[in-house]
Length: 424
Image 1: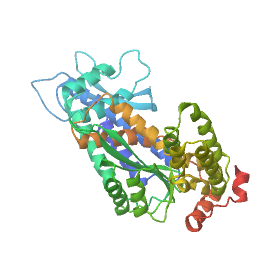
Image 2: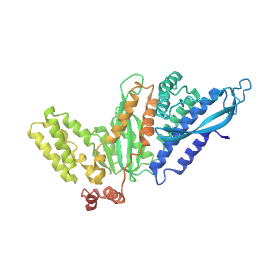
Image 3: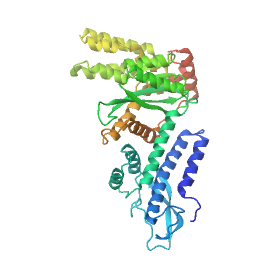
Image 4: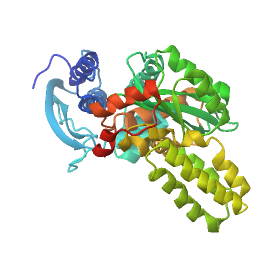
């Protein structure tokens, strides 16, 4: 199969076309297609660079003194990967003493594991493009050797994508719920861990979107205020609901940046704080009573009554600190009950974001300390974007729920509408 351009150029053109069109009416399908094209591009480039190194010259380069063979197009090969079935062009050669066999495709292997390729790309970037580390990762993954030019090009693109992510405008993003949280990592070769602030949310159409990844240092009011101002400067309108933990600096920044938005205190963070102030023998009983008050309530009023009854019970039993902990910011614990019934449990905590940050911790654990904040932030973004952001984990918001959300934004009504109960 003869070509005038390499397959990698064709894949790049397909990616450009997809990005130009946008997500369209089926965002999940578009993002899935983009992820597959990205995986194909990484594999295809690695194969082409491997072939250039085997042949001894780059494409269109003339080296009469070294003539191992002549290029003879590409042969399509389909493979099963973690991203599904992909097609890659395998370079062909003529007038050669031996055929070209890519080390990316060991003989007898039916499944090409692209997860090590992703780890290789991100790991190479974080470690400053050390060829020793790149080769070590390749060998551990059973992928052979990857040329320095390939690793350099991929990592430069990764850095450029992160810079574009930080600058992109958010005028077309209309959030139903915004989630904010932080993860503490060893950002520098020495010194204490620093906070990396993350913001993502669900749009009014039900799509999950990653919005910001930035350094937070101490996770102070000034840090969160800087994140909020950055989102506003890039065009993000006020979310309907903001879900966050109870850090005073974060609460103050949220109220300052989006005074008209509802604020939901993370129910999971609050129960953790509550149980920490109780003896172990009481924890399971109080935990059950806490969640029962929230789970069985159909309105904010009912939830407040249940939680205040628990506060009185704790106070009478002599657990004053626990009672005070539950009373603090109690109104913000039940705000999620203003929203569509089937989304309430998901929107009452930062659990979804915490799971993503748990994935960040798992992948950064083997690295230890980062060489600097650029490497750290890029890796956090890469994990959230490449591994989490393209997952099909959005939500479905019906037209009825969308109308309810719009009324909630302007009315702040805590009454449950009959249609919503029926739909549940």
